[in-house]
Length: 332
Ligand SMILES: [Zn+2]
Image (tube, rainbow, N blue to C red; front, side, top):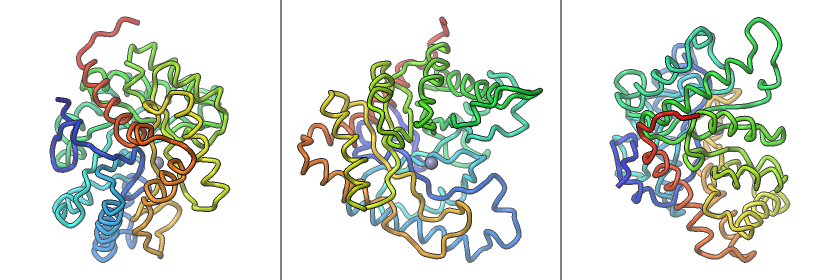
């Protein structure tokens, strides 16, 4: 048994079921709940209602678990997890919440060592997020175009690399997997895997996310060959051409034998502040994968085994691989 932390406590990895690998209840920025007028009682109540509605809706399309990849600096709200957990009977969806760091490394990490950063992540996994919130079940790590910025007194890339190494060490210490936001068009999974391998992380415990923002199969199979999971975790439209492109990528990877290393998701949120509060509720924000992409895959020759692998097996494998390396000492 592999225990996976959810916002209602640990469950067996075997019980995760059909999982969307990269979603959010809300996003914005650290401290946004303290900005006057942004998140008052009425808004908070609406955030809960929208989240519960979206969870109930996605449950109807057969999804069992959502991985919420919102670290503190992306506006994670522990109170919202607690409120949604209290209403579990209304939606029935497991939620795994995240520790980790988004793409703009906060200045207070700059002078910290990799091990000090790791320790911050470890506390959120072992004791709870924000002190008294639910325990994190996964480590979010972002690696975006800032990685190009290598000049100056405090180069951004160096800070990102330090956080990536901290994530690797926290993963090994706690047995929790890492899921990464990456800029796929710059093939940034490659330098990130170099760092994780250098730290001795089991590649199978790592998801290189947003990988369906590219159609470069040579790049994607090079990541899969190293053993990592590919997060095809952005899906925003039911436009037929869009569906055929993103579905086609998942199908091509399955046909190349990598279905067990592909996970699916939307990177969508029912109650977010990305740019601004969305005045239009979107209870269906997590239904394109189960109701459009998966049927497209079936129609175009994907087997049930392929679909099970992408929705169930691939994510479960990342939790199990991470758990199996817990406490292993670094060799490289
Ligand atoms: Zn995201």
